[in-house]
Length: 160
Length: 358
Image 1 (cartoon, each protein chain N blue to C red):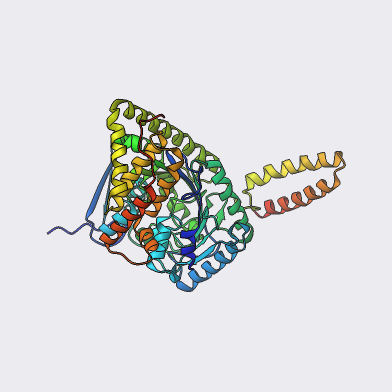
Image 2: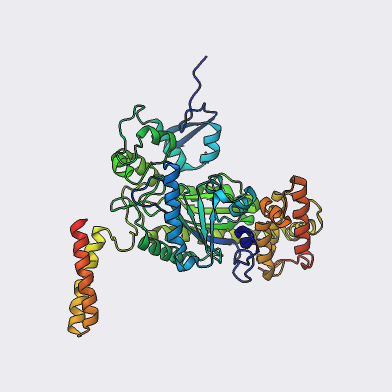
């Protein structure tokens, strides 16, 4: 008798078998009933995720120093252990990210007060121009506020 | 009175506010996934860590003006029915309700709810009745900024907001519209529309989200990609498609009404007839017939000012809501009987269905 196929997301026997054909490339995903129901077998993102997972190597090669999460855990769960895992698994996840997200880097918002370097520099330039204007128009209150902001931006840039 | 009873009793814009409802788009939703720096994600955290995460997040949320006089609900302290009510109202997800260490902080008007210890430490959600993408986004943005001011959020310059799942990293933004598409369903075009949306990076799901059926012709349409696009670009992409889907839905409705003539009106009138006299109503039967009544309100076959009542019945006709209203556990027949009674009572002074004006 042939070996039962295991679920791509856990170790259970797979009972749901999916094939997807995109531009002639066939991707097959095998899921147990629980994972198929939970993950929404119709969700294309799950499809791509499971695909990337099944092609990963079987032995743990990476472990997050912060939380002890390994690439084997990722294979089982499809979720990372902690924010620092992104540092550990960042390169390994690059291909998966491109598949799921079609892009590799963030261009959106940042937490208030921690603008990414590019935005920091832009804001710094703007603030310098605004401070010149404030001084010319003798608005010393605004100039002082901008001077503080510039100092803080310069400090953040030095640390980023 | 428990907090969940309080939520059920309160009049909020999704169920009560006259004038907030619109044709086709039931509601707009923004969700932001956020995490605390240096803490394991909930799925990997140990129980004491999850407790610390919950305490820190709840404390920060509770201090925000938006949640003044709101609700703090710890899932471990709620009964099964109360948790099911929250899921049916879309205030928490099934996943959050299933665990013991999750919490939800909900604003008094129920437009903002933050799930703590779901897949990510924080899932900020803002919901408005009707189609209000910008307004909904601005509320979420303000909440995000306020939270970022008190909590140190996990963020990387290159990858943006760091999340447990690679499908959320970057903006952590899931923007969606809950749309009612009886015209496209009746015309048999829904598969085609779904495919077009999927191919352009949007997900189409049923009424209760991932893996659920589209009861009552209600679908949730949302963005998939969260990385490499700005929030602005994500909103614009979704907004363009929703506008397009709404237009197609109206075309399908007008065409149906014109081609079917009396048959179209008959279908809507029959649904009103059944809802007004049935003694037993299953949940899916009620949803499908209420869908006809909503269509009738949109098309001028029933007065538009009755639409909010139809929306309320769609929400309050769900199993946990029916039992919560009855104040007791009911078996399937008991629920169907009770649901029928609630619907009959609500529709007893509805006028007759007339030919469409829209």
